[in-house]
Image (cartoon, rainbow over all chains, first blue to last red; front, side, top):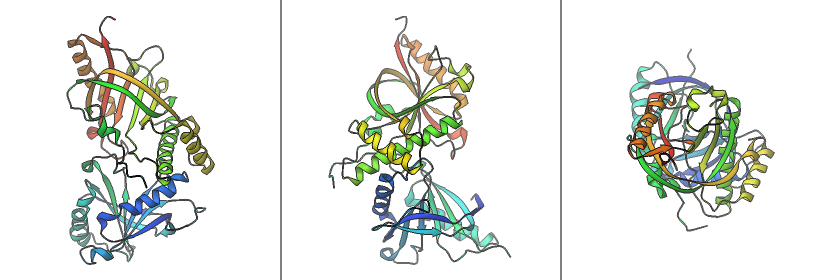
Length: 156
Length: 208
């Protein structure tokens, strides 16, 4: 497993919260992208990020929390179901998952179950992030790319 | 909310967007595209600016329609036509800063020029894509073409084009239109040897 360490700056994002199984996050993305798209916020450099608060192996699927997020400027204002928040900066371990979203769990299992215990690093008490690098509407599922960011405690 | 299924032009025109690693003949009917044109090196400042404008307009139009419960559709893959002044075919021998290009995203014909203008105004107003007003809506027909999936770096296309040319010659045809590429992979994320690109070149009966 190829893992890299990256430092992220804190990121201001617009988001829509989804509570329920991960395979039903599509409606949160639709609400978010409709609002942002019609306001001209979805250009070529738009960053699409999922915030994953819960481990579906531990939390009941109907209570799993997930935020569909897009990075926006400080002038973006929350309205209706679209909120704003700042994602934590700091060091993250990053792995790229290549393939369908429904196999992300296998990459998480290897990342957190095998790489992390041997890395000498510890997880920070913050959610993992997923950066979606292509449009699932027009991309063959086998060609989808997702960067998984696991937050790390600073080295002492 | 509309009950119509989302339009996916790549699925609708599968013969044009799912092509083998061997050259084939395809007939490409009229297509409507969001387009933006320019000149210069791929990846250069003008090229990068125009790609930003094209994607910005594509997603702003789509999401504005979706918000208004109008017919939804899939934003297609990036496509590009390439040519040099005075010839359509020998661009590979010309310095890259003299390459002409037209970047395109195939779009359902239900999208109107007025929707484009509104999207450009929104994007420019937000400072997101200063060249958004350069994006046009154009329709054209390529007709009979040779087409092939190229797997590998863009600078190895010459080998694929030679195979396409050989098929054309075998069929009594010759290249006559703009070199057209359909980008199935993102070169920022996929290793050069794994990049997948459909190459398409219109053909005519030889000697005409």
